Image (cartoon, rainbow, N blue to C red; front, side, top):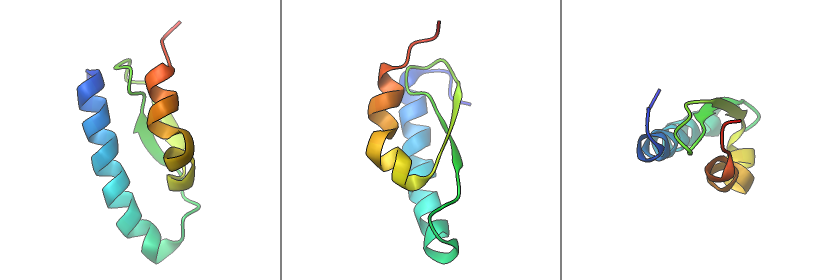
Length: 65
């Protein structure tokens, strides 16, 4: 997993692009392991719709306890 916030954002962007291609063939209900964009490396299971709706914004606000 990417160890930095910038790395996490880049990973999520690439995952989003790749998953969009796959979702076009298999439907959009599958969950993907995005990573928290604060850099804590926590996995967040989201569908593409959930990521688009709350993804980066929610992940950026997360801070480890």
